[in-house]
Image (cartoon, rainbow, N blue to C red; front, top):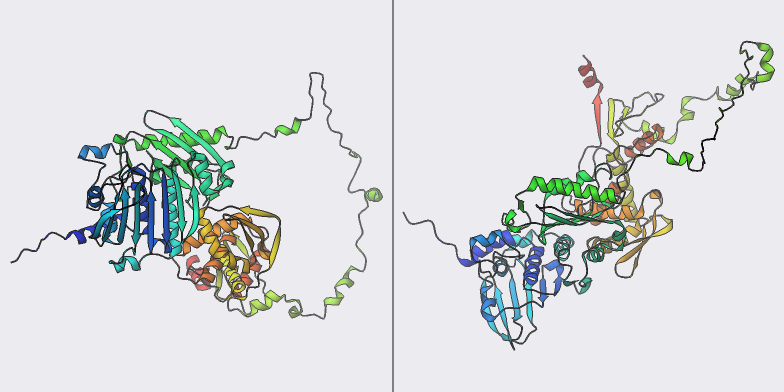
Length: 605
């Protein structure tokens, strides 16, 4: 029997490693920008085309590499960061494994120009699919200039499963936010398809947050600062009024490295308990400084999951620090004893009080007819019965309302057209009413979503949305991520009744909303729509119009727990019955359920 086990070639081994380290264009940018930071760069330029699928260019003014180092940097496990196993427990650099460049070169065409400070010439090296095509001297600037082209060209299965340009662009922005927020002393420039997205100069942390997420966040930032023997915690949290549907403004950093930590996120959520609505998320930018020997950052290839030695203690410290900051700024609500009741009263030791005087008649006798003239009530006319004579010749059909005529056309109602349907609300979530076959149970939020979806979809197709001008236009400065989505959707939103105008390069003015949604918060609605669009893009295969209609329907629909009057429930039911599909939502979830009379009788036997 011949031997079966053999060593993989370097090209195959590098592609396997690339599967762990390089998942999408954002992964390439993360690794190369971190290398630029480790090289001592003070300026980093990032440029992409087609969300990084066509090309990625990273230019830095760091220390650069010699010709030998430039060639060695593309070998697996070649690194200048560590030399022995003990170094893994005292890591202070962003990268250290020596896998990034080897992984990138395995699945793309890579071109590098680099020069060490003080040298006359640098080196120019071209690699494609782990194979060195050429290396020669070149005149270039100090630092490194990487150009990555045709990502995953030799792994078509990986390229096929990349998301849309908008989705991949969102991932790139997320990675860049994580990097620039922990390196505020470094200047960053980001250009997408030749359009500048942001140009950040060296600044303090607060100003860096404002530069990324807009000036509106400035008035909502609260400082967090606590020092213990276990960890130092600094940064900012946002006031409860600045909440988001997504967790896009939640950042943890440890020793200037971004980390994902659900356990610590829970500590902050607990501090905001009962201060923010359910389903909303607070914004925070928290920085931990701990002894590198007390954490392990080598448990995941992307180095975003980090294990702490004193995790439970840090949880308690973080929770207390956030509560303290909220308390210092009087965010936590105090008890209200109606202090303004006596605010204008000047009380002294000589102040006297008089009981209120209530006029009464102690001699009044309700059974004494002689006192009737003193307490005269309006008398009922003697001919009151004649008021009903006009209706004696009419039948029940003369009194049907339009929605009742609609009800007669549905199979849910009884054959007896004179029977009136009574609507009940259960737990402010479900609507109950009787039908021909039994009891009808309706999820009110899903029903409202279906009604609004079909309405907005029709408006998008006909482009006949009616605008209701807002009394005071709203200036909206979205984050770069939100701005990219809004650029794409602004025309369609204006077709259904919004009036959104671009002011400058990064601001929008919301001047009007759809006429049926006048009671909404314009900015909050647009933010939630952007969030919902991002959520449904990967789960429901819908065309753009359907996605917009669904996102707006989800945003504007009744919230769970909304109390409805009987007339509102009745109106919702008849509008649902007029929908093209009143049984299921766009995502296939049930809207209503009919519990038959037979089933009810079986349960009660």
